Image (cartoon, rainbow, N blue to C red; front, side, top):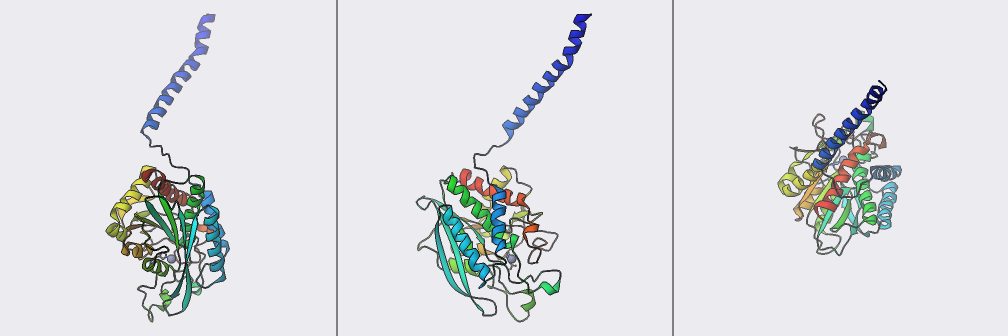
Length: 331
Ligand code: AHN
Ligand code: ZN
């Protein structure tokens, strides 16, 4: 009788042990199928801090003090992380002929490397919230937390990562100026809008920061921090840089961000990658689109494009995908 009780008492323990070894078996099986990357971890909290710091200057509109100060901040950050920083000053003209001082900021890492790629984003913010639901805001400058600061913030976190571990491939992080001062909606009757966007990248395409500059390809980041972001394959990217687009999207999907990087196509977007492609460097555009909102995200060119409307998970998905491309795909 006593022995029976001992057996009974041991039974749950035995069952538990059996169940446990069973789970861990399953776990190892699953782990074997799951892809484990060797890329360092992209810190999206750090990227978010870089995003907030840019927005703290206020809207980085052309010819403003906030623009000057933020430009200095961007150049200083990249230098802090060991980049060789080039600055390109450009005399540009807005849609109505207003002269503005453009400043492209280029952070070069591992300049001796035999192969290099470029990652780019615009750093200026739109002077007019011409898509705001309140017409009273149509001439108010936007913070551009998503449209402007997000791409630069991801590049700054990449720079911080490069300082800790230099990748084998050379990388240039290019901050284009004057992307977002294209003809406002409220001036469209009197002014053409063609060629009024992406002024900094057009300037750079005509005159690189170093003579004879070459990169194998480029990746443009535009609005990579908005809530509910989905990145479809943009049509100019598919037309002019299909292999690069497929490579980046495949990397994102492989590391588990298939719900952000969708293989489906979307329309043509006039963006900084167009000029880059035209000067002979195939460049893809990672740009969030919202098919329910006639193109871009809800906060696009509104006063709601501020730090309160940023999703760090989106910064992470894009940043870690770039880490995969840089440290694994191009290793
Ligand atoms: C146009 O609306 C013509 N192009 C969109 C490019 C853009 C503006 N990206 C951010 N802001
Ligand atoms: Zn914009």
